[in-house]
Length: 228
Image (cartoon, rainbow, N blue to C red; front, side, top):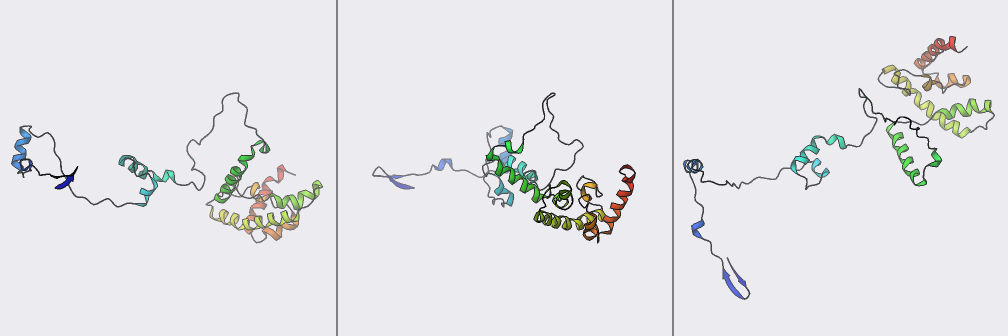
């Protein structure tokens, strides 16, 4: 190799005495037995491993052992879409003996937390962890006149739509017996069905749902001796 350095031509020539020579297997074994070999080196050609979608999730400068470990448990990093499964011992927050329970009124929270709290409520509504209340229908059709409160017909109309749209779901879940109701039971509870308390609207709203009507009657008969 020739080049110019500081205005002078320079030529680099290899040392032929350092050229490597091929060795037979028997020669290598002899060198190993005499402990004349300090280190072995090998150069091989290999194609790069194909990249998967998981590779883009983790930094490229991580050690390969860490990357393999993260890929193995990649499900842990997925965005949760519901409640965690029930365990033999569910998580609980143990309070120090004698400590007072947390009692902070909503309006006492700082203003900057309002947006984050509303965001969390919306996420829980989207995931089905909480559902819109149906109590507005009962309040504005039955309870308000009894309590002398003004009626809100718009709120009653909106609550009625939610209530009526939920009745097919209640009946389907009960018939299939593969879902839970508001209180975690596999059958409708008073919390699910007590929203319909106005007799004049009773038949009009739940008339098509025979199974729900049968269960309401069974519940009334079972609880009648205790609530005369």
